[in-house]
Amino acid sequence: MTHSASDNMLRAQVAACTLLLNNLKIMGYSGHVSARLPGRDAYLIQGFDQPRSGLRPEHLLICDYDGKMLSGPPGQRPPAEVFLHGEVLRARPDINSVAHFHHDITNVFTLVDGIDLLPLKNHAIRWVSGIPVHDDPSHVASSELGRAVADTLGSHHAMQIRAHGQIVTAESVPACLVDAVHFVENGEAMYHAAAIGKVRPLSDKDISAFQRDFKRVPHIKKLWKYYTEGGKSSGLLPEDWELGGE
Ligand SMILES: [Zn+2]
Image 1 (cartoon, rainbow, N blue to C red):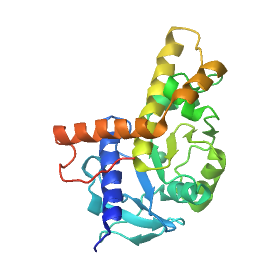
Image 2 (image 1 turned 60 degrees about the horizontal axis):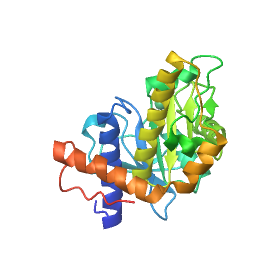
Image 3 (image 1 turned 180 degrees about the vertical axis):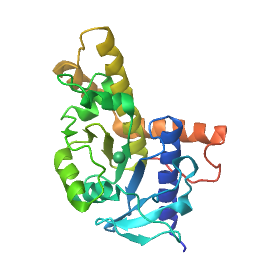
């Protein structure tokens, strides 16, 4: 099958984002990154048993919002939690990429009573509207469970599934990588801070000042370049992948 140049870049971005998240130990042996195909009610996502450590653009499937595979390599099938991506992308036309992973330290906050994950670090202002926790720890393996997750997410930009993992949403694949990195940085920072003393979340004044000065588009461009160029020079990412920027 042939793909347009923009589809090829989106495929390379999903594969690169997955390999980078895997290399950063944010995404392990399971989890996935999806990207909405422009102008279509469909998205790219990896297959059920495709190793995250060896994903290539040509391995990706195209699925619809119901989780049905529209095209993909012979013998492949969608991941069990494809419904999480389909229902979140259906419910949220403002976002184009979803990352789902199972990062243990960040998820610790769903395992204890009385300590909620809060925005502590400056880049965590992305989540000042809230970081909802979905109470049902099940695999999101049906449309019904996917809709329940999308309801919990609401208009927020990230959430946790109790005793399970995380969902980060963004306007593009590069933005989803950067948000996933910052989400986990913030979770790890709070984990360490809570271990040594009373946690001090960002104040309203801190948040306003940072929001005023922060430029999301160049920040995403800078970090996407940092991670993808680093990935190419280390051999993690092939040199000839066209990865663009934001
Ligand atoms: Zn999961």
